[in-house]
Each structure stands twice: as C-alpha cells, then as structure tokens.
Image (cartoon, rainbow, N blue to C red; front, side, top):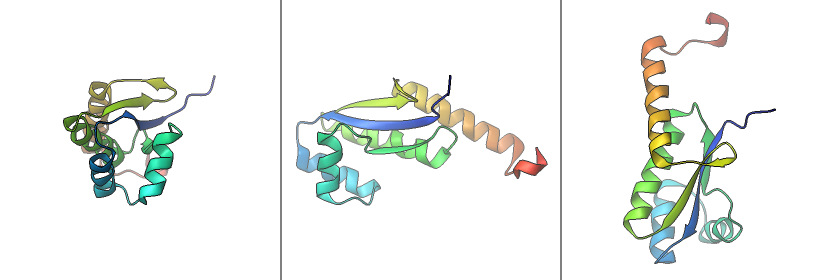
Length: 109
C-alpha cells in the first residue's frame, strides 16, 4: 500500500461565499474563479506535504478564519478526513523535530 502524505483543506459549505473568498485570497494567491472552481469541484483549496510546517500552519489559519464565518470545512490527512486537532499535532511534531535536529541535509542523516 502506498501512503499518501498530502494534507489538505476543502470548503464544504459557507454562509457567505464572498467573505470566504476574501479570506482565502488573503492567504492563497488564487483568482476568484479558481477558488469558486475548487469549491464547486470539491478540490483542495490548499494542500501540502505532511512535513511542511508552513503549509500546515496555513491550513490551520484558513480553518480558523473560515470557521469563524460559519463555513464548514474538511481537513484531510492523506485520503482520509481528519480533524484540525490532528493537523495541529502534526505541525507541532514537525516543529519539534526541526528544533531537535535542525535543518539537516539528506546525506547528513
């Protein structure tokens, strides 16, 4: 079995599409039509590898900002729906590893 190490966020529904688009564009440089297409096709608004600390942080920011406006979101860990708490823990683990080992090159491991 191949593990999918992608983490992502999808917008399932929103009380105000205009407000949601404004928030998304604050963090992700997409056109309004690209955002609407991603929402309509149930594609990820944003995704990253599970070891991308900045990307995980962006998913958390998007989730927090959009849920404040009444949006319903799904976060994914691989192919499975997960929870924002799992993503927060994942980000914490990546940060802890980075602080423990620093920025090592692959040949140093």
